[in-house]
Image (cartoon, rainbow, N blue to C red; front, top):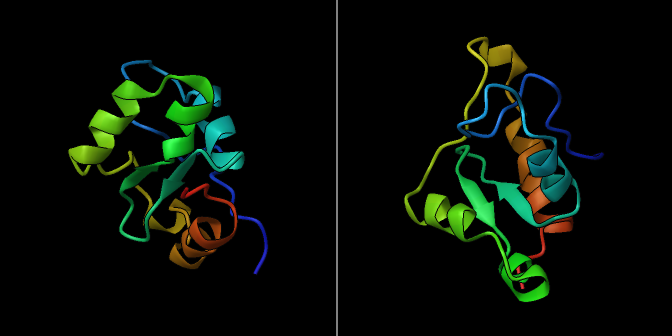
Length: 92
């Protein structure tokens, strides 16, 4: 399948006015994931290994949908998100 990439138009919801590179880095390293219905997933290992991420866990519990570009063709592909959850995301 190939590596899932969030790309520039993909944004995590934050109060910051621009994309957060730290969120993209957490995704690339498997500490964050996105379900095929575009909901945030947070690895339990983020808390276990680094002792942080409490605000992210609250967003996940709330079923928060990530911020997506207005143009649907710029959204991350669902099959890439599925691959990322299966191959990269640190589920335990």
